[in-house]
Length: 281
Ligand code: AMP
Image (cartoon, rainbow, N blue to C red; front, side, top):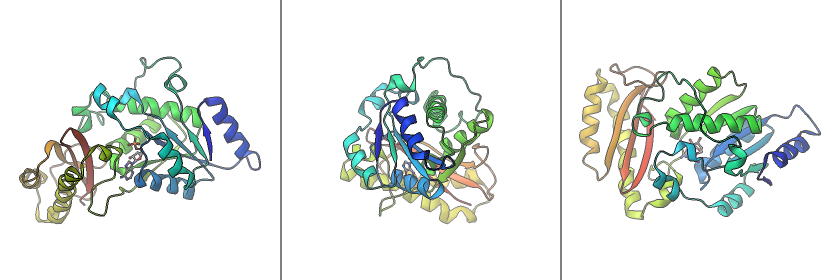
């Protein structure tokens, strides 16, 4: 695996790998590091769909609205390298902030048609603008044919798909299923900030989602189902930010139960913010 910290060595590494056959395709997995099996499932998927696999590790400041959250975000580069060495990753790109944003971070605009105003958008101002800014920039640098994003960040996948259409970017976006612990907790870099007792409490998010899936066909009204789920959720020890049942395309709360709806939850376990989701129908 080649490790590259700047644009020039990245380009050279890619062109060396393409030398034998310039048609070799690039699959790209952008991450913020503190890698786990969820990330590795994306790396494996990238290698199934393309010839050369590039992974980036960059904790992107523009998508954090809370400076404390950015400060305490786990950074474990050596462990990440060790994990990726055992994976089909060909190139690890670990850029500095200057490399990603050589002209500063201020003048980025994109119309996300309201997809960014619901759920995460209500609680994390300009989060998705920051996500689009970094993904668009990384796409410019890496020039992938395909990029893999996890459905753990359900709203993010919809927004990235919208962004590539809006900007006419020729990258195929592939979504990957959520990887969970044996007890159901969605793997997340932030889980390393939880104690074992908190991890057990956090499983209540998954239990609520499973409950939603089991009950969905007993209901014709999504708001009535939501109410029932809120009661169930509040039996646990977590602080809810939102529990929404939304349409997969519009991301707007749905009132009808129909095919293509997903239940999304954001909640605090102690001081750690967790998100998870499950398609219900
Ligand atoms: P992050 O490092 O948190 O920015 O995540 C990088 C990518 O990994 C994103 O596309 C995430 O959706 C994806 N990802 C994170 N956790 C999981 C998981 N448990 N299962 C599947 N994909 C995940």
